[in-house]
Image 1: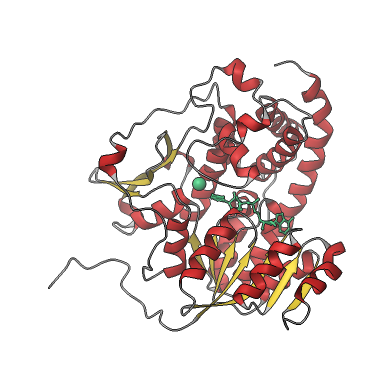
Image 2: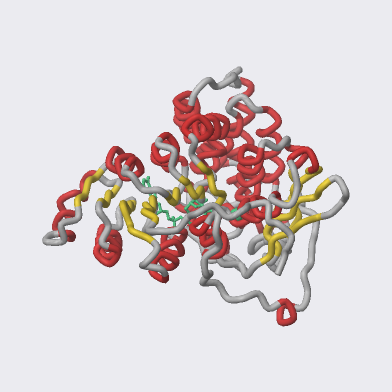
Length: 407
Ligand code: NAD
Ligand code: MG
Protein backbone atom coordinates (compact mmCIF):
# COMPACT_ATOMS: atom_id res chain seq x y z
CA UNK A 1 0.00 0.00 0.00
CA UNK A 2 1.41 3.36 -0.95
CA UNK A 3 0.94 6.46 1.18
CA UNK A 4 1.68 10.15 1.10
CA UNK A 5 5.28 10.46 2.27
CA UNK A 6 5.59 11.94 5.72
CA UNK A 7 7.96 14.86 6.05
CA UNK A 8 9.38 13.44 9.28
CA UNK A 9 10.71 10.33 7.58
CA UNK A 10 11.53 7.59 10.03
CA UNK A 11 15.01 7.68 11.48
CA UNK A 12 16.13 4.51 13.22
CA UNK A 13 15.44 5.04 16.88
CA UNK A 14 15.38 1.46 17.95
CA UNK A 15 17.07 -0.03 20.96
CA UNK A 16 17.21 1.13 24.53
CA UNK A 17 17.03 4.90 24.98
CA UNK A 18 18.60 6.36 28.11
CA UNK A 19 16.59 9.18 29.64
CA UNK A 20 16.91 11.70 32.46
CA UNK A 21 14.03 13.61 34.00
CA UNK A 22 14.78 16.98 35.60
CA UNK A 23 11.85 17.81 37.86
CA UNK A 24 10.79 14.16 38.14
CA UNK A 25 8.52 14.71 41.15
CA UNK A 26 6.41 17.45 39.53
CA UNK A 27 3.35 17.32 37.35
CA UNK A 28 5.25 16.96 34.05
CA UNK A 29 7.66 14.60 35.80
CA UNK A 30 4.71 12.46 36.86
CA UNK A 31 3.33 12.25 33.33
CA UNK A 32 6.79 11.42 31.98
CA UNK A 33 7.36 8.66 34.54
CA UNK A 34 3.91 7.24 33.71
CA UNK A 35 4.95 6.88 30.06
CA UNK A 36 8.34 5.40 30.98
CA UNK A 37 6.64 2.94 33.32
CA UNK A 38 4.51 1.70 30.42
CA UNK A 39 7.55 0.83 28.24
CA UNK A 40 10.34 -0.50 30.47
CA UNK A 41 11.87 -2.35 27.51
CA UNK A 42 12.51 0.93 25.64
CA UNK A 43 13.89 3.22 28.33
CA UNK A 44 16.72 3.12 30.86
CA UNK A 45 16.61 5.92 33.45
CA UNK A 46 19.95 7.67 33.87
CA UNK A 47 19.19 10.54 36.28
CA UNK A 48 16.22 11.98 38.16
CA UNK A 49 15.98 15.25 40.10
CA UNK A 50 13.67 17.05 42.53
CA UNK A 51 13.68 20.26 44.53
CA UNK A 52 12.93 19.07 48.09
CA UNK A 53 10.79 15.93 47.82
CA UNK A 54 13.37 13.34 48.89
CA UNK A 55 10.89 10.56 49.62
CA UNK A 56 9.19 10.88 46.22
CA UNK A 57 12.52 11.07 44.42
CA UNK A 58 14.00 8.04 46.19
CA UNK A 59 10.87 6.00 45.47
CA UNK A 60 11.09 6.77 41.75
CA UNK A 61 14.84 6.16 41.71
CA UNK A 62 14.40 2.68 43.12
CA UNK A 63 11.40 1.83 40.95
CA UNK A 64 13.25 2.83 37.76
CA UNK A 65 16.69 1.74 38.91
CA UNK A 66 18.13 5.19 38.14
CA UNK A 67 21.90 5.60 38.06
CA UNK A 68 22.00 9.04 39.72
CA UNK A 69 19.56 11.26 41.60
CA UNK A 70 19.87 14.84 42.82
CA UNK A 71 17.88 17.06 45.13
CA UNK A 72 18.24 20.84 44.83
CA UNK A 73 18.09 21.54 48.56
CA UNK A 74 21.67 20.99 49.82
CA UNK A 75 20.43 20.42 53.38
CA UNK A 76 18.71 17.21 52.30
CA UNK A 77 21.73 15.19 51.17
CA UNK A 78 21.90 12.97 54.24
CA UNK A 79 18.15 12.36 54.09
CA UNK A 80 18.52 11.36 50.42
CA UNK A 81 21.48 9.08 51.19
CA UNK A 82 19.48 7.38 53.92
CA UNK A 83 16.47 6.92 51.65
CA UNK A 84 18.70 5.28 49.00
CA UNK A 85 20.77 3.16 51.40
CA UNK A 86 21.56 -0.27 49.97
CA UNK A 87 20.26 0.58 46.49
CA UNK A 88 23.65 1.40 44.95
CA UNK A 89 22.16 4.55 43.38
CA UNK A 90 24.57 7.50 43.39
CA UNK A 91 23.23 10.85 44.59
CA UNK A 92 24.03 14.51 45.11
CA UNK A 93 22.45 17.69 46.45
CA UNK A 94 22.46 21.38 45.57
CA UNK A 95 22.11 23.27 42.29
CA UNK A 96 25.43 21.82 41.06
CA UNK A 97 24.08 18.30 41.50
CA UNK A 98 21.02 19.15 39.39
CA UNK A 99 23.37 20.34 36.64
CA UNK A 100 25.44 17.18 37.09
CA UNK A 101 22.27 15.12 36.56
CA UNK A 102 21.71 16.98 33.27
CA UNK A 103 25.32 16.36 32.24
CA UNK A 104 25.06 12.61 32.69
CA UNK A 105 25.03 10.77 29.34
CA UNK A 106 21.31 10.32 28.69
CA UNK A 107 20.17 10.42 25.05
CA UNK A 108 16.94 12.20 26.00
CA UNK A 109 16.32 14.69 28.80
CA UNK A 110 13.00 16.01 30.05
CA UNK A 111 13.58 19.61 31.23
CA UNK A 112 10.68 20.05 33.66
CA UNK A 113 12.09 22.01 36.58
CA UNK A 114 9.65 24.82 37.40
CA UNK A 115 10.76 28.42 36.77
CA UNK A 116 14.02 30.09 35.77
CA UNK A 117 15.86 27.66 38.08
CA UNK A 118 15.51 25.21 35.18
CA UNK A 119 17.72 27.22 32.83
CA UNK A 120 21.19 26.06 33.89
CA UNK A 121 20.37 22.35 33.99
CA UNK A 122 18.56 22.54 30.64
CA UNK A 123 21.58 24.31 29.13
CA UNK A 124 23.84 21.58 30.50
CA UNK A 125 21.79 18.98 28.62
CA UNK A 126 21.75 21.15 25.48
CA UNK A 127 25.52 21.70 25.58
CA UNK A 128 26.23 18.01 25.28
CA UNK A 129 23.97 17.69 22.24
CA UNK A 130 21.18 15.67 23.84
CA UNK A 131 17.57 15.40 22.72
CA UNK A 132 15.95 17.86 25.14
CA UNK A 133 12.20 17.71 25.65
CA UNK A 134 11.53 21.23 26.82
CA UNK A 135 8.61 21.68 29.20
CA UNK A 136 10.31 24.52 31.06
CA UNK A 137 9.18 27.53 29.03
CA UNK A 138 10.91 29.95 31.39
CA UNK A 139 14.27 28.88 29.83
CA UNK A 140 13.20 30.36 26.54
CA UNK A 141 11.46 33.40 27.96
CA UNK A 142 14.50 34.20 30.05
CA UNK A 143 17.28 33.42 27.57
CA UNK A 144 15.65 32.24 24.34
CA UNK A 145 18.18 33.48 21.84
CA UNK A 146 21.17 31.92 23.62
CA UNK A 147 19.31 28.79 24.43
CA UNK A 148 18.47 28.16 20.77
CA UNK A 149 21.96 29.23 19.62
CA UNK A 150 23.65 26.88 22.04
CA UNK A 151 21.35 24.07 20.97
CA UNK A 152 22.26 24.68 17.32
CA UNK A 153 25.99 24.85 18.09
CA UNK A 154 25.97 21.68 20.17
CA UNK A 155 23.76 19.82 17.69
CA UNK A 156 21.12 19.34 20.39
CA UNK A 157 17.55 18.57 19.33
CA UNK A 158 14.93 20.64 21.13
CA UNK A 159 11.61 18.81 21.29
CA UNK A 160 8.79 21.15 22.35
CA UNK A 161 6.89 19.48 25.20
CA UNK A 162 4.52 22.33 26.04
CA UNK A 163 1.22 21.19 24.50
CA UNK A 164 0.66 24.22 22.24
CA UNK A 165 4.25 24.19 20.97
CA UNK A 166 4.22 20.47 20.49
CA UNK A 167 1.07 20.96 18.39
CA UNK A 168 2.86 23.60 16.30
CA UNK A 169 5.89 21.33 15.97
CA UNK A 170 3.66 18.60 14.57
CA UNK A 171 1.63 20.94 12.31
CA UNK A 172 4.74 22.69 10.97
CA UNK A 173 5.82 19.41 9.40
CA UNK A 174 3.16 19.93 6.70
CA UNK A 175 4.86 22.89 5.06
CA UNK A 176 8.05 24.89 4.71
CA UNK A 177 9.04 27.88 6.80
CA UNK A 178 8.61 30.29 3.88
CA UNK A 179 5.07 28.98 3.34
CA UNK A 180 4.00 29.75 6.91
CA UNK A 181 1.86 32.86 7.41
CA UNK A 182 1.13 32.55 11.13
CA UNK A 183 0.74 30.20 14.05
CA UNK A 184 -2.18 30.17 16.46
CA UNK A 185 -1.91 28.86 19.99
CA UNK A 186 -5.02 28.14 21.97
CA UNK A 187 -5.74 29.16 25.56
CA UNK A 188 -8.41 27.62 27.75
CA UNK A 189 -9.06 31.04 29.25
CA UNK A 190 -8.55 29.55 32.72
CA UNK A 191 -10.98 29.64 35.65
CA UNK A 192 -11.68 33.38 35.28
CA UNK A 193 -12.52 33.39 31.58
CA UNK A 194 -16.05 34.66 32.15
CA UNK A 195 -15.39 36.67 35.32
CA UNK A 196 -15.77 40.44 35.60
CA UNK A 197 -12.55 42.40 36.10
CA UNK A 198 -13.52 43.38 39.67
CA UNK A 199 -13.97 39.72 40.63
CA UNK A 200 -10.70 38.67 38.98
CA UNK A 201 -8.99 41.40 41.04
CA UNK A 202 -10.16 39.77 44.29
CA UNK A 203 -9.80 36.10 43.27
CA UNK A 204 -8.45 33.81 45.98
CA UNK A 205 -5.63 31.27 45.71
CA UNK A 206 -8.10 28.38 45.84
CA UNK A 207 -10.09 29.91 42.97
CA UNK A 208 -6.93 30.50 40.91
CA UNK A 209 -5.87 26.89 41.45
CA UNK A 210 -9.11 25.44 40.01
CA UNK A 211 -8.14 24.99 36.38
CA UNK A 212 -11.10 23.87 34.27
CA UNK A 213 -9.21 21.41 32.01
CA UNK A 214 -5.60 20.75 32.92
CA UNK A 215 -4.03 19.30 36.06
CA UNK A 216 -0.65 21.03 36.47
CA UNK A 217 1.85 22.38 39.01
CA UNK A 218 0.88 25.37 41.19
CA UNK A 219 2.87 28.09 39.41
CA UNK A 220 1.65 27.29 35.89
CA UNK A 221 -1.93 26.90 37.14
CA UNK A 222 -1.85 30.43 38.55
CA UNK A 223 -0.21 31.64 35.33
CA UNK A 224 -3.09 30.06 33.40
CA UNK A 225 -5.63 31.93 35.53
CA UNK A 226 -3.88 35.27 34.83
CA UNK A 227 -3.17 34.26 31.20
CA UNK A 228 0.48 35.07 31.94
CA UNK A 229 1.05 31.46 30.89
CA UNK A 230 -0.18 32.29 27.40
CA UNK A 231 2.08 35.33 27.42
CA UNK A 232 5.05 33.14 28.34
CA UNK A 233 3.99 30.76 25.57
CA UNK A 234 3.85 33.50 22.92
CA UNK A 235 7.45 34.34 23.81
CA UNK A 236 8.34 30.64 23.90
CA UNK A 237 6.89 30.14 20.40
CA UNK A 238 8.80 33.12 19.12
CA UNK A 239 12.17 31.61 20.12
CA UNK A 240 11.39 28.00 19.36
CA UNK A 241 10.25 28.61 15.81
CA UNK A 242 11.96 31.96 15.03
CA UNK A 243 8.66 33.83 14.68
CA UNK A 244 7.97 37.55 14.98
CA UNK A 245 5.24 38.67 17.45
CA UNK A 246 2.96 39.44 14.48
CA UNK A 247 3.19 35.82 13.34
CA UNK A 248 1.82 34.48 16.64
CA UNK A 249 -1.90 34.65 17.47
CA UNK A 250 -3.73 33.49 20.56
CA UNK A 251 -7.32 32.27 20.48
CA UNK A 252 -9.33 31.32 23.56
CA UNK A 253 -10.70 27.79 23.15
CA UNK A 254 -12.33 26.72 26.42
CA UNK A 255 -12.46 22.99 25.60
CA UNK A 256 -8.64 22.67 25.16
CA UNK A 257 -8.98 20.10 22.38
CA UNK A 258 -7.13 21.95 19.62
CA UNK A 259 -3.74 22.88 21.03
CA UNK A 260 -2.10 24.74 18.19
CA UNK A 261 -2.56 25.52 14.50
CA UNK A 262 -0.37 26.65 11.65
CA UNK A 263 -1.71 28.72 8.78
CA UNK A 264 0.14 28.35 5.47
CA UNK A 265 0.20 30.67 2.46
CA UNK A 266 -2.52 28.71 0.64
CA UNK A 267 -4.80 29.43 3.71
CA UNK A 268 -4.71 25.84 4.82
CA UNK A 269 -4.74 25.70 8.61
CA UNK A 270 -3.21 22.54 10.06
CA UNK A 271 -4.13 21.75 13.66
CA UNK A 272 -3.19 19.16 16.26
CA UNK A 273 -5.97 17.88 18.51
CA UNK A 274 -6.04 15.67 21.56
CA UNK A 275 -7.53 15.24 25.02
CA UNK A 276 -6.09 17.82 27.44
CA UNK A 277 -3.48 15.47 28.89
CA UNK A 278 0.23 16.32 28.91
CA UNK A 279 1.10 12.67 28.34
CA UNK A 280 0.28 13.16 24.64
CA UNK A 281 2.86 15.88 23.84
CA UNK A 282 5.36 14.15 26.15
CA UNK A 283 4.77 10.84 24.32
CA UNK A 284 5.41 12.64 21.04
CA UNK A 285 8.74 13.92 22.41
CA UNK A 286 9.66 10.55 23.93
CA UNK A 287 9.01 8.64 20.76
CA UNK A 288 10.28 11.23 18.29
CA UNK A 289 10.90 10.70 15.42
CA UNK A 290 8.77 7.58 15.85
CA UNK A 291 5.40 7.45 17.56
CA UNK A 292 4.90 5.40 20.71
CA UNK A 293 1.66 4.24 22.32
CA UNK A 294 0.06 7.10 24.24
CA UNK A 295 -1.58 6.98 27.65
CA UNK A 296 -4.22 9.72 27.34
CA UNK A 297 -7.89 8.98 26.81
CA UNK A 298 -8.70 8.75 23.09
CA UNK A 299 -10.38 11.85 21.72
CA UNK A 300 -14.15 11.43 21.39
CA UNK A 301 -15.31 14.45 19.39
CA UNK A 302 -18.92 13.29 19.18
CA UNK A 303 -19.03 13.22 22.98
CA UNK A 304 -17.41 16.66 23.23
CA UNK A 305 -19.92 17.98 20.69
CA UNK A 306 -18.87 21.60 20.41
CA UNK A 307 -15.58 23.40 20.03
CA UNK A 308 -15.78 27.15 20.61
CA UNK A 309 -13.37 30.06 20.13
CA UNK A 310 -13.13 33.63 21.46
CA UNK A 311 -10.69 36.48 21.09
CA UNK A 312 -8.55 37.05 24.21
CA UNK A 313 -9.56 40.03 26.36
CA UNK A 314 -6.48 42.14 27.05
CA UNK A 315 -8.41 44.44 29.42
CA UNK A 316 -9.27 41.67 31.87
CA UNK A 317 -6.02 39.77 31.22
CA UNK A 318 -3.37 42.47 30.78
CA UNK A 319 -0.55 39.98 31.35
CA UNK A 320 -1.00 38.59 27.84
CA UNK A 321 -0.61 41.97 26.20
CA UNK A 322 2.46 42.70 28.35
CA UNK A 323 4.12 39.61 26.85
CA UNK A 324 3.73 41.01 23.33
CA UNK A 325 5.06 44.38 24.54
CA UNK A 326 8.09 42.69 26.13
CA UNK A 327 8.72 40.61 23.01
CA UNK A 328 8.64 43.73 20.83
CA UNK A 329 10.92 45.63 23.23
CA UNK A 330 13.50 42.79 23.17
CA UNK A 331 16.86 43.52 24.84
CA UNK A 332 16.12 41.48 27.94
CA UNK A 333 12.51 42.66 28.42
CA UNK A 334 11.10 39.13 28.28
CA UNK A 335 13.61 38.08 30.97
CA UNK A 336 12.23 40.91 33.13
CA UNK A 337 8.65 39.87 32.34
CA UNK A 338 9.33 36.34 33.54
CA UNK A 339 11.29 37.35 36.63
CA UNK A 340 8.66 39.87 37.77
CA UNK A 341 5.92 37.31 37.20
CA UNK A 342 7.73 34.70 39.32
CA UNK A 343 8.04 37.24 42.16
CA UNK A 344 4.39 38.28 41.73
CA UNK A 345 3.07 34.70 41.76
CA UNK A 346 5.12 33.86 44.88
CA UNK A 347 3.73 37.01 46.56
CA UNK A 348 0.17 36.05 45.60
CA UNK A 349 0.66 32.54 46.99
CA UNK A 350 2.02 34.10 50.21
CA UNK A 351 -1.11 36.33 50.24
CA UNK A 352 0.98 39.50 50.06
CA UNK A 353 -0.79 40.80 46.94
CA UNK A 354 -4.20 40.44 45.36
CA UNK A 355 -4.61 38.39 42.19
CA UNK A 356 -5.11 41.52 40.08
CA UNK A 357 -1.82 42.91 41.34
CA UNK A 358 0.19 40.16 39.61
CA UNK A 359 -0.06 41.87 36.21
CA UNK A 360 0.39 45.31 37.80
CA UNK A 361 3.67 44.25 39.39
CA UNK A 362 4.91 42.83 36.08
CA UNK A 363 3.90 46.01 34.24
CA UNK A 364 5.46 48.30 36.84
CA UNK A 365 8.69 46.28 36.88
CA UNK A 366 8.91 46.38 33.08
CA UNK A 367 8.22 50.15 33.02
CA UNK A 368 10.74 50.88 35.78
CA UNK A 369 13.33 48.72 34.05
CA UNK A 370 12.87 50.61 30.77
CA UNK A 371 12.79 54.05 32.50
CA UNK A 372 16.07 53.20 34.24
CA UNK A 373 17.64 52.64 30.79
CA UNK A 374 18.32 48.99 31.52
CA UNK A 375 17.24 47.60 28.14
CA UNK A 376 20.38 46.46 26.34
CA UNK A 377 21.40 43.72 23.93
CA UNK A 378 22.40 40.52 25.73
CA UNK A 379 25.49 38.71 24.61
CA UNK A 380 25.28 35.42 26.49
CA UNK A 381 23.10 33.29 28.75
CA UNK A 382 24.93 34.68 31.81
CA UNK A 383 23.67 38.16 30.84
CA UNK A 384 20.14 36.80 30.92
CA UNK A 385 20.76 35.20 34.32
CA UNK A 386 22.08 38.53 35.66
CA UNK A 387 19.01 40.35 34.31
CA UNK A 388 16.80 37.71 35.89
CA UNK A 389 18.41 38.38 39.30
CA UNK A 390 18.29 42.16 38.98
CA UNK A 391 14.70 42.17 37.75
CA UNK A 392 13.68 39.96 40.68
CA UNK A 393 15.27 42.49 43.06
CA UNK A 394 13.46 45.33 41.30
CA UNK A 395 10.12 43.50 41.42
CA UNK A 396 10.63 42.66 45.11
CA UNK A 397 11.41 46.34 45.83
CA UNK A 398 8.24 47.45 44.00
CA UNK A 399 6.09 44.84 45.72
CA UNK A 400 5.12 46.83 48.86
CA UNK A 401 3.80 49.80 46.87
CA UNK A 402 1.88 47.54 44.47
CA UNK A 403 0.46 45.62 47.44
CA UNK A 404 -0.67 48.85 49.10
CA UNK A 405 -2.25 50.34 45.96
CA UNK A 406 -5.95 49.78 45.34
CA UNK A 407 -6.74 48.61 41.80
P1 NAD B 1 5.72 21.32 39.33
O1 NAD B 1 5.79 22.43 40.31
O2 NAD B 1 4.62 20.32 39.44
O3 NAD B 1 7.09 20.51 39.33
C1 NAD B 1 8.32 21.14 39.24
C2 NAD B 1 9.47 20.16 39.40
O4 NAD B 1 10.69 20.92 39.47
C3 NAD B 1 9.41 19.34 40.68
O5 NAD B 1 10.03 18.08 40.46
C4 NAD B 1 10.27 20.15 41.65
O6 NAD B 1 10.81 19.34 42.67
C5 NAD B 1 11.34 20.70 40.72
N1 NAD B 1 11.87 21.99 41.17
C6 NAD B 1 11.15 23.09 41.54
N2 NAD B 1 11.99 24.10 41.86
C7 NAD B 1 13.24 23.65 41.68
C8 NAD B 1 14.52 24.23 41.86
N3 NAD B 1 14.68 25.48 42.30
N4 NAD B 1 15.60 23.48 41.55
C9 NAD B 1 15.46 22.21 41.11
N5 NAD B 1 14.27 21.60 40.95
C10 NAD B 1 13.17 22.30 41.23
O7 NAD B 1 5.71 22.02 37.90
P2 NAD B 1 5.15 21.45 36.53
O8 NAD B 1 3.72 21.83 36.39
O9 NAD B 1 5.54 20.03 36.35
O10 NAD B 1 5.93 22.38 35.48
C11 NAD B 1 7.31 22.20 35.18
C12 NAD B 1 7.67 23.06 33.99
O11 NAD B 1 6.91 22.61 32.87
C13 NAD B 1 7.31 24.54 34.16
O12 NAD B 1 8.28 25.32 33.50
C14 NAD B 1 5.97 24.67 33.45
O13 NAD B 1 5.76 25.96 32.94
C15 NAD B 1 6.14 23.67 32.33
N6 NAD B 1 4.88 23.12 31.81
C16 NAD B 1 4.05 22.43 32.63
C17 NAD B 1 2.85 21.92 32.14
C18 NAD B 1 1.93 21.11 33.00
O14 NAD B 1 0.92 20.62 32.50
N7 NAD B 1 2.21 20.90 34.27
C19 NAD B 1 2.50 22.13 30.80
C20 NAD B 1 3.38 22.84 29.98
C21 NAD B 1 4.57 23.32 30.49
MG1 MG C 1 1.00 25.13 27.37
